[in-house]
Image (tube, rainbow, N blue to C red):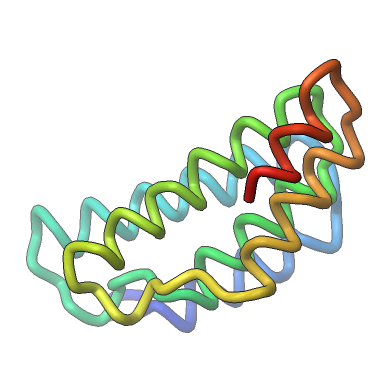
Length: 119
């Protein structure tokens, strides 16, 4: 019995309640694991979707690490790229963009406000 997209996203949602560095690392690890299982092993039931990505983005934003803005922006850019190449399941929405803005606002830096404004 293999976990599916709902299993992984549920695990990540549970980690989102912790809001620490370990939660961020676990969420990114699970997202990467899902990509490997889908892209390399061909296991379609673990293909990440917008809900999965938004869960990871929110975990990063709530984790409040110094690089949260940059990390979340990288994930958002990956979503945008996948969508441009035809993956309708990962089209960013207002939740996606708000999570990235929150990540930058929770971790103010010299250009964080500017970068979030550019979204």
